[in-house]
Amino acid sequence: MDGTFDLKGSRVFVAGHGGMVGSAVVRRLATEDCEILTAPREALDLRDQEGVRRWMADRRPDVVVIAAARVGGILANDRFPVDFLNDNLTLQTNIIDSAFRSDVRKLLFLGSSCIYPKLAPQPIREDALLTGPLEPTNEWYAIAKIAGLKLCQAYRRQHGVDYISAMPANLYGPGDNFDLDASHVIPALMRKAHALKGSGGKALDVWGSGKPLREFLYVDDAADALVFLLKNYSGDSHINVGTGQDISIADLAGAVVSVVGGDARITFDPTKPDGAPRKLMDVSRLFATGWRPRYALRSGLERTYEWFLRHLEKGDLRLGPT
Ligand code: GFB
Image (cartoon, rainbow, N blue to C red; front, side, top):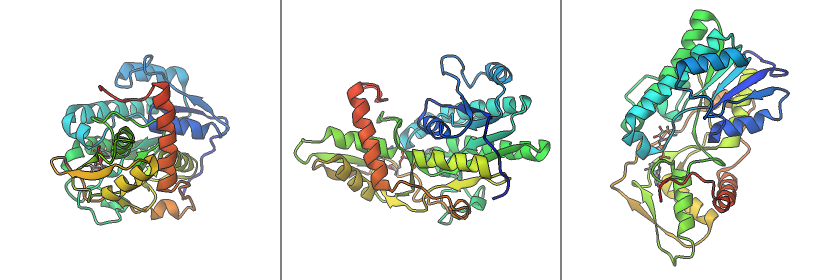
C-alpha cells in the first residue's frame, strides 16, 4: 500500500468517540504513541458548522478520524430519511471542511458497504461504486456516505491533502445499540433471544425471509484495520474493510441463540423488509497488505453477549422505549 504515516507524537481527533466505532478506535489508539482528542457531545454538536470550525482551530489536531454518524438498522433508515441524509451530510462536511482549514495532515472518513449498488456483482470490488441503483431501504444513508468519500477525494484532487476513506462491512460488538426500533440485526436478535431465555421454546421473531446474506465485522477488528490504514494507506480510492465471509440471517439467528443459550424457536416475519439480498465485499486490496481480522463470528458474538450482560446489569444500555 502506498504511503506511510507516523502517528507518533501526533494529536488524533476521534469524532464520534462515544459511539460503538469511535470508542473502539479510541481503545485501539490507546496502544499507539499519540494523543487522543475527543469532544463531548454536550460541548460540541458536530452539525454546528461554526462550533466545529472553532473547536478544530482551537485544538489543532494533526489527524482526524470521522467515526461520527447517524446510524441505524434497516427500519430506522427507512423511517427517518431526513435524519440519515441531512445529519450525515452536515456533520461530515463540517468536519472535513474544518479539518482542511486547520491544516489537518491526515483524515480518515468511514463509510459503509451500503454505498454499493443493490445488485452489485459479489464479492463487491471498490470500483463497483456508482455502477447501479442503490438498495431503497438505505439509499439516504448511502448517498450521504458516497458524498463523504467523494468530498475526501475532491480535497485530495484539488488541494493535495491526505484524506482517505474506508468502507466497513456490517459492524457489531461492545457499545452497540440494543434499541429494537433503531438497532442492527445482531443486537436486536441478541436482546430478543436473551428475553426469551427460560420461556420454554417461545418464538424468536426474525424480520424478513432469513435469506439475505450479510458480512459481519467485530468492531475491534474494524478499529484495528482503520488504524492500520491511517498508518499505511494514502490513495484516492476508498478501501473495503471486512472479513471476506458472509452468513444468512437465518444462520446468524441460529448462532445468536446458541451463544445466548435457551431454546427459542426461530420464526420469520415476512412483513418486515429484507433489504439488500447480499453485500459481501471484496477485501483483496486490504488483505494484500497482510492485515486480517482476529475475531471469528462466534467469538465476536460471545464477547458482545458478555458485554451486553454486564451493561444490562449496570443499567446503561441503549434500549430505547420499553
Ligand atoms: O442489520 P440490519 O438492520 O441492516 O438488517 P442492513 C440486516 C438483515 O437482518 C435484514 C434482518 O435482512 C433484516 O430484515 N433482520 C432480522 C433484522 N431480524 C431483525 C431485527 O430484529 N432487527 C433488524 N434490524 N434486522 C443497514 C442499513 O442495512 O446496514 C444501514 O440500513 C447500514 O444503512 C447498515 O448500511 C450497515 O444490512 O439491512
